[in-house]
Length: 244
Ligand code: PGA
Image 1: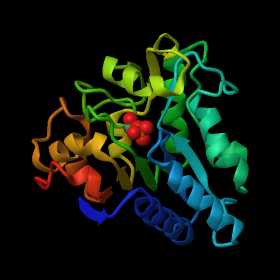
Image 2 (image 1 turned 90 degrees about the vertical axis):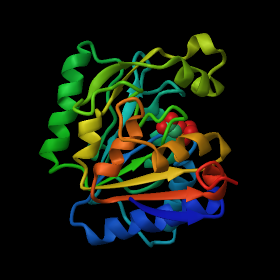
Image 3 (image 1 turned 30 degrees about the vertical axis):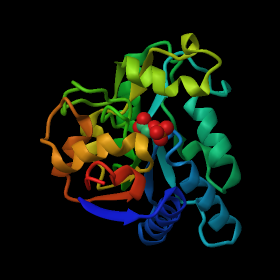
Image 4 (image 1 turned 180 degrees about the horizontal axis):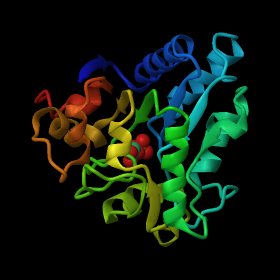
């Protein structure tokens, strides 16, 4: 893993935006894997700014999102489709038929998982996958214990994930308990991975990632076996790893 240390969230977001814009410029018909959550919001804001300044266009870009809550419609403000539309898609010149967020209200969720895999394959695979990390080491919604060989699947969310995400909902009872998530193998099949890590709440996970074993108990650890991973991490997230 190529670890880039930055001062804070803003610098992480700016470096990440430069990284993604560079890949959009250098890869023909780029396929991006995108993530939701607080971590990539700053990245998306900066990408929009670069689009507005004519530094980048999304007209040849295809995107696949990592995950979606089961049971939330596209127009539900807590759905990841809604998040992506609000935070990125509607602000840039992306063709919406080149965007795929798993459908969390599909009648046949198993089929939806297969469709997500099939669409990724048909697009030629993901060129660059953007990732955050959960406090428990999850990537996408692949919670501890998920087999490294998993493809897109329906997952039961960890109680810690439900608690962490309750901040977006009126009450914790409204947080969905399941999601559709790209699997760990799906993520590992990406040609390149960009992992963003910011803040003290991620310091423990970051220390485990840098210093721990590769184990299904800590899903992000598998990234150490991918040959093209860039981690952009801020000082607050490094406090435990660096013993500060
Ligand atoms: P966050 O979530 O960016 O909201 O911290 C990251 C994750 O759970 O993968």
